[in-house]
Image (cartoon, rainbow, N blue to C red; front, side):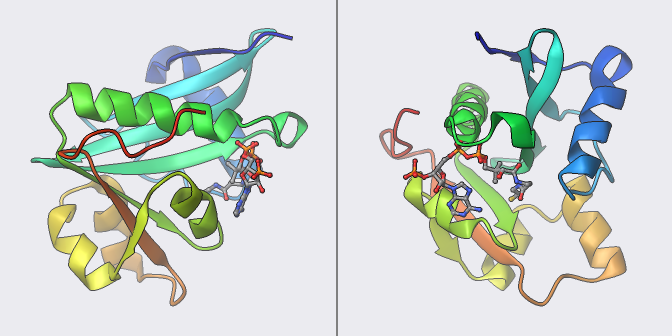
Length: 158
Ligand SMILES: CC(C)(COP(=O)(O)OP(=O)(O)OC[C@H]1O[C@@H](n2cnc3c(N)ncnc32)[C@H](O)[C@@H]1OP(=O)(O)O)[C@@H](O)C(=O)NCCC(=O)NCCS
């Protein structure tokens, strides 16, 4: 069954993306903040995957990576991350960050590196997700990871 990855629009796709993120246990706070980009994976016109990019100057925050349980194990998360990394490169993002509680090893397998949370936050302090966690408090076990996009490609193809 073919899966299509395309840009998501808040007006037409926001409700589907929020439903998927909530079903996957992720926050929808600050979704579609100004300047952000979201891509979604569609199978039979149903949203089965999502990933987003928030900008903060030369840095970016990859967020809201989720794949519907029915579509897991087929490297769709790799495809979604690859699309967002390419988009970030095209938008001249120099360094991309993400946060993870229990999927950090997935990102390190993709070529991302751990970075102390305190070192990551100054780069992306203006993103909606960081502002939200600054307000409500960070999970004690939150892991920050980053990938340097100024270097030649480090993210392996899906
Ligand atoms: C995390 C998530 C997006 C992964 O998507 P997926 O479709 O299951 O994973 P993929 O098929 O793309 O990737 C498969 C590979 O990643 C690995 N992987 C999957 N989830 C992983 C995890 N949580 N930690 C470490 N590795 C993981 C698999 O072992 C597999 O590796 P292999 O091919 O060497 O066997 C999905 O499980 C999900 O939506 N989880 C709930 C939301 C979430 O936690 N999102 C991440 C927020 S940072």
